Image (tube, rainbow, N blue to C red; front, side, top):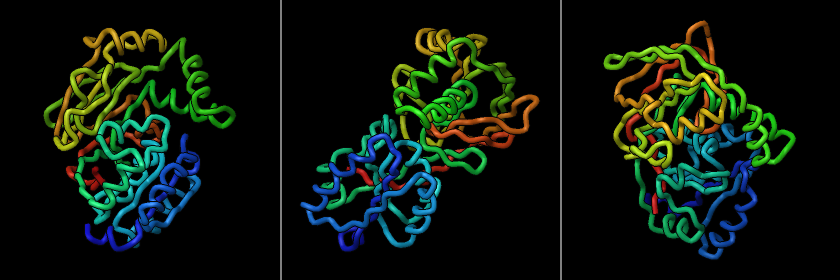
Length: 290
């Protein structure tokens, strides 16, 4: 920790983050407080490469972007002797708010000058790390459409277009979920695995009970043969239609008649080979805390 006061830290900004331009609200205040840093503003395609390249050169790295950017950093920096700080430059910044990390330039200056850290659990599906949740079904399909429309329109309008494109029908999958303690099969359009368990108010409140319980939360919709409007109705008004479980053990998800499937990871979307094997990584990431 003492090293942070004596050597520069790195700032890595995803240039395509929703509020990437807001880095200009942070750096002048860092300069006023005579903080020494090296700034890397990179395209998403170079983000992972840059984070790898600086791994052994800094003990503190501030990452600017949304939850997907933070997930990429966690993929590289978990179980490493490095402190990760967050610059909230994404669209929603769910994780930074939920973890109550320093979000303003002034609070970040205080945190850097008198650093305190916390360690949190991460979760993994196959070889992919995530900090919030991973899903199959409705959300990855929505996110894929959102990313497509974002090539032509701004992000908020892309959300609207994606919403309307999914009003009529949400595809269902035949899933089999199991480990030593849990086993069930279900036809559903929504399965989500979370890094630790969300509070009982989920989905009305997106907040976890703890980041240190080394648990996987399991959420799936029991009845989901309908379009998105009814999906949202069940999601918000009919919580009894959700199956909610938790486990500390590795969990396998199989999908009938498929060798791979589209999944979401903290808002990112990728195609992953089946089966999906989920596990928890206790205290795997060190964060800068105010």
